Image (cartoon, rainbow, N blue to C red; front, side, top):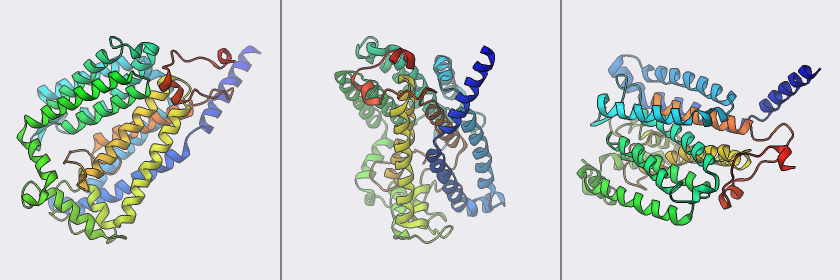
Length: 402
């Protein structure tokens, strides 16, 4: 009898978890993937035909990565996210080893060494997910101690310093800044002392200024951002061509496939500046739709964080959401000339396997947190703002709360 009761409870809980799947989040990501595949084909069919004799060359490769990424998403969504809390240390150690391997034996493209396996794997993209998992697990294990410098700021700064330094060796300042910014937001959500956060921001800002001023090409990007018309055929070329593509799209755009600027005008048209092609072909309306999808993704992601049943889930969901949304906003800001140039792909839209896989993995983890949002008894979860005011210790069961 007891065995039958236990089996019934497991079946009921599994059914409840299936019912808790955030279908709005799933639909948003599906829309982004479809839009991304459309833009990959539209921005590459001419280049693919000239280079490989197959207009669909890049689209087929992106479809393969999409299928693999969806498999990862489904697998991660069905796995209890607490598993990654137990494996966080090994996951982070493996990530650091991969980043170190890139520095030693990595492949070089476009003047930067960021890839492994003949240029097909970019460990810095894996880092965007693994470091969020590790920081969430680390913060959840500290509880109130996170407000003490010896338990909070100092080890946090050492970890972020190690990871970002390895990425900076790959000449990838933009990804290093993205990871540091996401980590600081997670640290804030965890209830870290504001003085410590201020110290971290000042130190991080000083390091950023140092990294920019010691490399002439980074200084040139700042000067170009301030006045791209100073060298319209040189350093300002990419910025101006992206703006021209957006402007020529008008309100409603020229239509899918009708972009003219993608034919040898806009550099990196299928990766870093694919937003420019989207604006030219779909116009202001298309850009607003894309922005709206990411706003909705942010809303659903933070909603998952607010309703998570334990501190690890809260910090994990908020970190994953920040990573995806900040990356998207940064890419759009670069193309619109709002911030200096940074080589950041547009999640789900830009061509590239590593970026797509890491983005879909992040969504899979978000879905896993959302499926475990409430216990089978229906107990309400601790909201994020309570966690911000006073960091919680280990998760408390429903029976202990009542």
